[in-house]
Image (cartoon, rainbow, N blue to C red; front, side):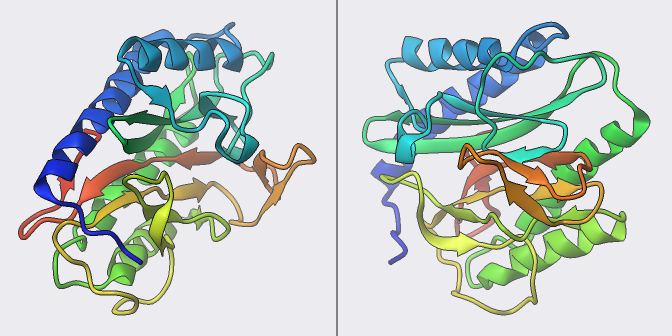
Length: 247
């Protein structure tokens, strides 16, 4: 069942999403070559806790950390640890915060030091695909209108859209209905209504879109070891344009 949020509930979600936004903005200056993904995780958790919130991901189905830190060929769900970030790497950080009974969720892919033009292009196209998709996130439209726009934009630039992981509804639960594919035919799925809150999160690969999950049960990597990028925001459907709660 898709939950329609009231104005009061949306206001609470803005608080959770504001914390996520703050974390992601501060990571832009924090991430440097030589640090580990565990350093990134501690930074994220400290900020969230300092705002009297709780990291949404920590303990979620057993996930052991506050943030997902996914380096280079890792698409999503990278577990923070002793892996060092080197100049030229890219790292996707997925952050969730829970406060006042509601979650916020968003992700960015950051450059580490100096990165190649190809890596910059992958990050840019992934971000742009999100904004192309949410042009269709309007009341009365259909869910897969968003999916289709993302896929068309990504593939126009020669990249792949990951099929194994979807966006999702969000609110009192971190993952609510509906699931949101980032590929597919337009004009299908449920009709969008004002008050729906969605986490739209294209994951884009520089090579083939196939992924596999490592033995830790979490870390998803590209099958062909190509680079991957991730861009996500929590958005609210309104009678007019969508409101991006994590920007």
